[in-house]
Each structure stands twice: as structure tokens, then as C-alpha cells.
Length: 345
Ligand code: SAH
Image 1 (tube, helix red, strand yellow):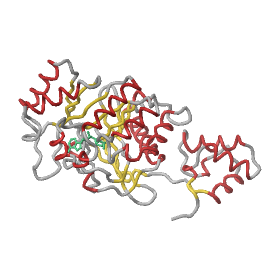
Image 2 (tube, protein in one colour):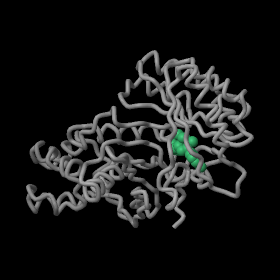
Image 3 (spheres, helix red, strand yellow):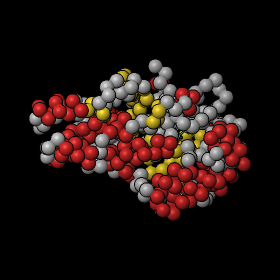
Image 4 (cartoon, helix red, strand yellow):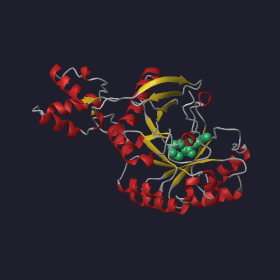
């Protein structure tokens, strides 16, 4: 691997400073920054409004690390899964999910995952490393290109629901979102971005303090402490009480409602007691519940609950005026659905 610095790890100010130090105009720095981020240059030679001499100077000091889509698979429902190779050879997956009116990018934030949800394939990979801001940003750029190419429209939404726990890679995820939303990046509205977390209370409070403008989704799956610990062992440390407190804090500061992701499994959370606990949890802050179809990842320890059990959830939530939607799996045939991302290739 090269010992030269990755120029994309530098802020705009740092690039400008580099030019000032070598006796060139600050303006050059701005031009280079634009090439790196809004124009997505992979080589210095692509920077055609920069002199050959300056390009050589840059190449002598820096490299441009970037991701490469190693291979991609297309599901029969139109979903596309990318295996994304990072500069050090590690691989993460990202998914493009098309519907009639939108294209959503589902992006990864870590190689593997810091947490240990027992129903999720990614959790079994363990965390290898955090993704850099540019590696997160590049996944979005790649999916935007695919959306234009295959669906004739730009990307409309982004969800941080790929591999990893975004709040365990807080700084880099924030920097990536800053670039995605900035005029020098992709100019996307934060309202079209959703960060999904397994529920790290301290970090949810930090999001609120940082006054972020994107949406928050929490993978709740159970509002009973004991059950949640069973399916998400990290919940012993990040308890429902602390989660509740952090969500109240989030709502007080942002005034934006929260989405709870919820899978209903046979024999785990399909009882009336589980439904009642969820309804009580939903009273703490304005929210909606998104019931997710379970995508089996193993030999059947976990099984999706019956249609009747799910309907009971919907009925009870609606009776209590809690908005509820059911999300059908997309891209199941290519292992691109929620919880299935595990670099099987
Ligand atoms: N770490 C984050 C984001 C990645 S997982 C989080 O937990 O929210 C994205 C969503 O997929 C989460 O709601 C997660 O609980 C869900 N999920 C994990 N495994 C799944 C599976 N096998 N079937 C369906 N959804 C799953």
C-alpha cells in the first residue's frame, strides 16, 4: 500500500493550505476539492483545468483512494446489490431499491458490525473496521449513477441500513452526510436521509445535540427488556430505560418523530404482552412503527410470526392511533434484503 496520504481524508481548508504552502493560489484548492467530491475524480489526470505540473505535484504527495464496485447482482424485483471493494481489499455491500416513484440507496457504515443482534447475518461477521467518510459517500455516488443508468432518474433517498451500526462510527457517518447534503457534494436534502440504529442511547443524545436534520429509525424489535436482551444481547448495556430517555431527549430537541423497526417472530414477541409493551413504549414520543418482514438467515431458530399475529399488532397499534406500516422484503433472491448482507460471494 502507498505511504502517500489519501487526499480525500483532507478537509477543503487543508487542501487550500497545501496550495498556499507550495506558493499557489487558494483557488486551486477549491478546484481540486470540487474534482474530488462533486465531480468524483479517481485520478489527478482527470482534473483538466489544473496544469500538468500541478497534477504531478499532487500525485507526488497524495493518492486518491476510492471504492470500486467489484460485482453487482440484480434481483427479479429490480433491486441491485453491489459488492464494494475498499482500497485495502475489504468488501462491504450496498443496495439500490427501486419503487415506482423513488430510488433508495441502502448503504453500509462499517465492515461487519460492532453489535450482536442474533437474527442478523452481518452481526456474525464482527466488526473489521469503520468506513471512512469517503467510502460511505462513494457508495451513494455509485448508486446514484446506477439509478440514472437503469432507472433514468437520480437517487431520491438514502437509508443507513446496510452493514454496520452507524452510531458506532459516528464521526465518519456525520462527515459523509455533510458531504452528501452539501452543495459541493450531492446536494441531497437531509429530509431524504434516514439513519437506522440498533439503539445507542448516548449517541442518540449526541445526534440531538448536533441538531441533525435527517430522520432517525430505531430497531426496537421488543419493548420488553428481557426479550430484547435475548435477541440483541448488547441491550444489557444499552437498556430500554436509557433508550427511552434518549428518545425523549431527541424529540424535545428536534421535534421530529421516530420510526421503530419491528420484526415479529414466532414464540418470541408474538404475544399480547409484547404488543401491549410496544404500545406503551410508543407513548413516550411521537412515532410510527414499521413492521419488517423477517429474512431468515439460518437454520430456523427465528421464524416469522403468523399473519394473524402480525395483524393483531397492526390492529392494536391502529386502535391506539399509532401509525404502522408493513415493509415487504426486497431483493431476497440475491441476499440483498435487511439483515442478509454478509459478503457471501
Ligand atoms: N445497525 C443498524 C442498521 C443496520 S440493520 C440497525 O440495527 O438499525 C437494518 C435493519 O435490518 C434493522 O432494523 C435490523 O434490525 C434489520 N434486520 C437485521 N436482520 C434482519 C433479518 N434477518 N430480517 C429482517 N430484518 C433484519
